[in-house]
Length: 160
Ligand SMILES: [Zn+2]
Image (cartoon, helix red, strand yellow):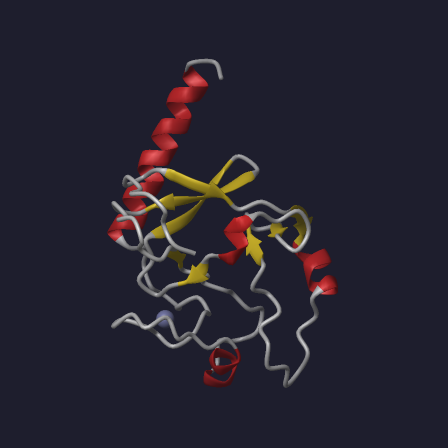
């Protein structure tokens, strides 16, 4: 998916909608089959420790945004909602992407990584959609979270 118009840094670009379900329900819905080629979790995003958003049910265009290892969007939780927020200014025509950072219950072995391959083309591409271990959040990601949290606090203080 590509930006039609320029997007300002820290703009709330699109909400990632879908059915809010517990992890266990998602695991029952989309069991990982040994040897399966297709990654089944592409449309399921984690909201918090207990819940995921299943965009196969009630999902919007956000589910078509590709993974990128050098993302210009960041998923940020606001209440029970997940928004894709611009990490930087995005020019019209740029492809949108965020880091899927998929986390498996099993160890992220080389074999597991190969089941979720990445071909985003970024120079820093890590070759997999799986969440990198022990990689600290980027400065841009921390800043976006800070800005959004401050905005939400200000709205709540205004009595939204
Ligand atoms: Zn990549």
